[in-house]
Image (tube, rainbow, N blue to C red; front, top):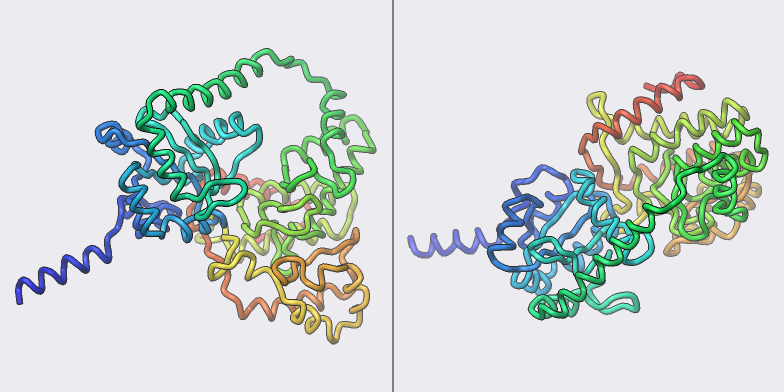
Length: 436
């Protein structure tokens, strides 16, 4: 009986086995403590272990509300076969980019110079025990796709590369050259920037069709928008002022904004702001609130004041805890991206059923009313104002949401983001008393 009992305990301990992330406090790292991958935290002890065992490092950087981080976790880090490869050939390290922004910044910079574009999360880095990078990418699919090898095949290929010292050094040198050349070039740039140069640069990068900066996926880019508003005011540039309002309108009326619950999503996956990436970050709200305050003070446009009040109410309802603010909410509910924030076409029609302004609302929603995201509807108003009957429509859809589970909230308290939010509330107090 004693032997059987001990055997039972051994099996139970294996089934309940945790990796080294069990000792961490980060919500993101805790999400991975039960993975079959033997994750380590980023510290001196881990780096020394890699040197001792002469194994390459696999560094995975993400954060707790990152949708594609969750996808990669489900597909790969909970996959026994992939875990066996990682445990056999690599020292696998998890980093919360919000807990260690300096580590994230370092490898995002390397990614940028290697791929000539900005990176994102998850960020996947393979390097020697001496932290010499020989392969860097983002999300890695479990099966081969047009943009990447499947994760299992890639792991085996990279483990073999590590044993070929000549080929490995070639990869390391190529990446080092990409980074060092970029740094050298930037040292020779002209640092004399005039107001005219700044204005022309902003105008050149502005999307005059859909508003915002660039022609791909759109980020709020609050600091850039703030600069444009400053220059418009200082130089009395009507074009920049027109662009500022166009961008503020697009962000407030299209899919980037949560019209039913208030607040901004992190970015839009397309150029016309229609489909957002459904995370809500505290810092986005804190950065954008002062811009809408400024715009309202100058234009007295009711939409801008509504956005300020609704966003503050959302932050208070979802993030405020003991007079401090949590960090973010996830893009997905029950494993489905955007599930909480989207509606079926049938739910939209039902919400419009007794609305006296049904026709106007349908016209402003356009084709999106038939489903524009996985057969669901992301609300987009193709006007410069909200349609008549909006409040009645919003109330009906709030009832639909009450039956859904709100996404995971990262309860980490980020001091810098809290300071930004406090400043935003102070500025918002100029136009509204609805702060607490």
